[in-house]
Amino acid sequence: MKPINAIEGGAQGHLTGFGSKAYRNYVLFALTFIYILNFVDRALLAVVGPDLVPDLGITDTQFGLLTGFGFALLYTTVGIPLARFADVANRVWIMTVCVALWSLMTALCGLATEVTIGSITIGAFWILLMCRVGVGIGEAGCTPPANSLIADYFIPRERSQALGFYAMGVTLGTMVANIVGGWVTDMFDWRTAFFVVGLPGLLVALVFKLTVKEPPRGYTDPPQAVQKERASLGEAIHELLGKPAFWLMTAGATIAAFCGYGISSFQSLFLVRTYEITAGQAAIWINTPVALSAAVGTFATGWLATRIYKKHPGAIAWVPAAGLLLSVPFYIFAFTTDNLLYAAIGLIIGGFVKYGYLAAQYTIGQGVVSMRVRAMATAVMLLLVNLIGYGFGPLFIGLVSDILFNSGAAEYGVAAGDLARSQCHPAVIGQLSEDLREVCGQVYSQSLQTSMVIMACLYAASALCFLLTWTRLGKDMVDREGK
Image 1 (cartoon, helix red, strand yellow):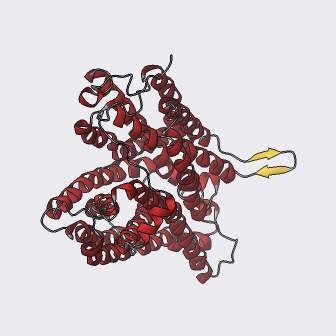
Image 2: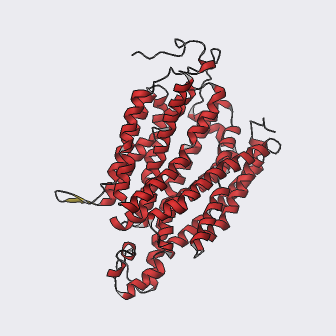
Image 3: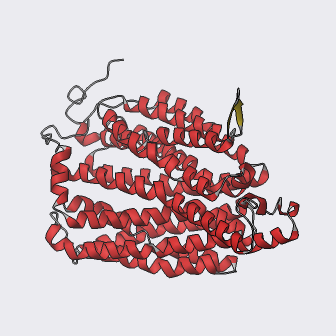
């Protein structure tokens, strides 16, 4: 069937939206459900990590690569051309293909094992890395076309609420990954968790394609709306270079993401190694309430900052700075206490207070530039936040953890290569000599604990960047409507 354009669709699109109200709500629910799956598949590796890491014999550095850079590199770089493609191509088809791809690659993660082809042996780590790259490519095609579809289904005054509903997929997906993934891992194994989470996505992709219509592009735009010429990359960069507040804010958001993604990727491993609980117990009883607290905190701190911003524009920078700085002692407490309940409380409070920067990064990022540059400014900011923050945060924690483990073992006279972290896992530690078991007791969990503390302290650097942003807002802010 030939797609209709906005003009052929009628002049009332900006008043009614596309389709009936019930159908629009169905489409919004379908898009949100897909976004939940997006984050379930993305977060699952961190949930099953405590069982996967020793089973495959991979290092913390390799695990950091899998959860961070291996996923984020192509997720970030492919996302840009996919977003451009979504501006001209069939968005329903793009999302269908991408959902099927990331779901299939998630399921294939459960088959990761050493493979021998002729005389060449490919380790399980490399198989898993290729699958994670595939997940990243698929998930890059989710949000840009989804946002575009919502814009054409919902009229402007309903769009903000619809996008807010869609955004719940982030926290709901993370919680579902912990609840389902943790339970399945404990009841069966980590491989089954990937099958259970990944395979249903193939059916979801099919149902989405069969039930969701591609709306006319620009259907809800007012008839008299004038399309503004988009600024070139060169023009955008030139304007951004004259806005120190933008770069200070981006640095603060990138460091915060660097810490946040790193800590969340290794949180289950930390809990299992330190308190000798199962992966499922860590996911369900600790990670889930922490994720819920972070969701509430994101809304609460964002609401507080934007409310104060109406009278004191600088609050959009110093409120998140205060929250980020306040999170540091709570995280340090959580990573150093011997009591699991106290650790959970520290993680819950730390997660609640630190997320005010999310509202700030979009408000400042779009408020310091002219209308024509806003989209490009957001794209530049997210490129840096995802590539550096998401890509290198988990890798940093894993690398520091391995360095501390090896140096700690060396202090006890263990030569390099004589003791791997996987040998210290409770399931196999009995195979070691008494001396090596004692070394494991000293460095197995302590190395990751120290790495997490170092990462938590870096939140102070993020807070400093937002405080410096505050000093420049008066000069750089273009949108002072809230003043």
